[in-house]
Length: 575
Image (cartoon, rainbow, N blue to C red; front, side, top):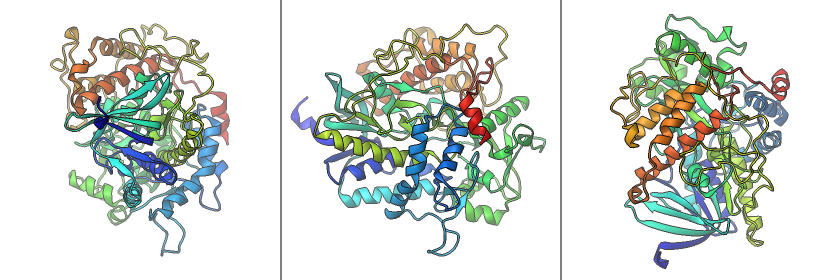
């Protein structure tokens, strides 16, 4: 490739959500930075975050209490050191956002205390919000404005094709613009902040750009991945075209969940009822929907009142009313939806991956903070805290050429089923031994329950279609020929590797995914084709990880397997 198609920089940041923007701003003080993003600078999951950002800012609260709640929600699989970093450094990260102009809501005038709300599995109110339910948009707008003001180099409409690896070290990336033109960026360090992959599933709260580009590229480059089986499904997405998320904060304000007969069922299952951890609430809703032949449950916010709903949740209120519901007067139909990936690119406490020169932050990174189930409103905080730490690690290592040096050893590995994409034979580094608590997949039990008919059944998600619409899979793909479509993949993942799973369903999904052909290099001429390649790679990886954990824990729930709660989780839940 000619020199005119090659760019050089100190730090390449891929992604423009809270993690990418935070990293670019921090690094730009002392280094040359290039920030690239697949569409527009302000587009991504961050701007759609409603509930808020958690932090122990109240004098009556503490980092230790926040950590206990995080560990409890994570079902014993959180990295305690990472949780401690998150909760202790979180208040400082929030104050940095305030300094950049994020106007979090207050209880009264400009000098009054910040309004804190309560969300599921938090022991006390500690979630800050902005514009009622527009926290992500307020954060994104402030960070984008700061990036523009500082004059940081930005390339919009530039999709990640693959990482460039030389002698075992990441030295930059290849990009593709919207018109198909390719460019190579050479960088002393590369930081991935590309978000999650909600587009793996037919029913998701994520925007269309969430196709897991960074995680897939890191996997192809040989980076260690971890915990891909843990995908969080938000319990309450509006059961209407668009799958609009109705924030957990609505339940924190007093909304309750009912079955189609009007009966509350969550208090019978967990003493925290509607404010139990998300995986608990989502599974309970899924089972009730199964009993209702797939029909949605009802979110009843009538006790909050129309006026309060408009004041506290203006964005949600407008969306719900635009869908034809008057939720101040009558309950609205809701269903679980794919929302957040707890797993991702394995990093240490400073964002370093197993590949020298490569760092990761935000949803694409697996820091260990979330364990098997993310605590509500910890995602924005994690992105802000660990993106800042990753930049400090990158800059401190630039002179010595040690940027992104990976962990000394990768403690366990997971093998991908035969037939997976080239370069993905081992997902998690070079270690050859398996993690003791992750035995090889067992043969599926002949007594497994029948596939569910509710949220874990397939639904059509073309153009964010109605999640209750029936699905005709017969015309979706020709498995014998290896042809497939994105809609077919989304249906398969929703029905076989979604909220409720069995070993036979996962094995069937793996077989189908391996029968489908990966896009040939000759057809990778559009961003859509790149995304499809990434989604197929990630679907195979997620399914392999899920098969490799035969017990149920947190967001990974197998109907054919007992729930496994480690001793550390029992202790955390007892606090």
